[in-house]
Length: 111
Image (cartoon, rainbow, N blue to C red; front, side, top):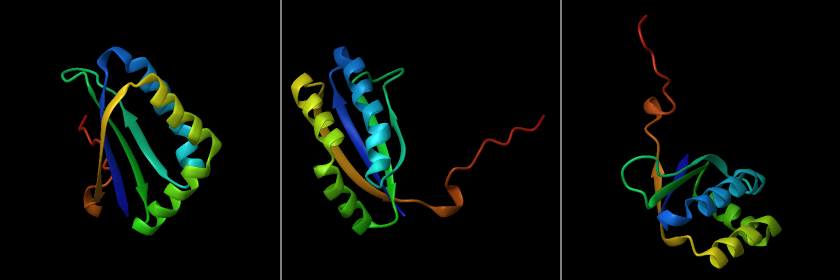
C-alpha cells in the first residue's frame, strides 16, 4: 500500500473555503477509487498548512484514480472552486509506504 501525502499552503483567512473544498473530496475521492484517510486543517500553531492523505494499493492504482478524477464532473467543479477562490497557494505531494506493524494502532490506556 502507498499513501499520497498532500501538503497544502493555504490562505489563513480563507480556511472556511479550504474546509468546503476538503469536504467535497470526502465523496469524490472514494467514488474515484481512493481510500481517503482524511483532510486535516490547522488547529493550533501554524495556520497556513493543511494536509490530505489518500491510500492506494500501488502506484498504478493511483495513476488510474488520477485519470478517473480528471473526468469526474464533481472533481472538475471542486478544482474550479479552488482556482476561483484562490485559497491554496502551493501544494506538494509525497508518496509514503506504511510500516505495517504501526498502521492504525489504537490507544491502549490502563485503567
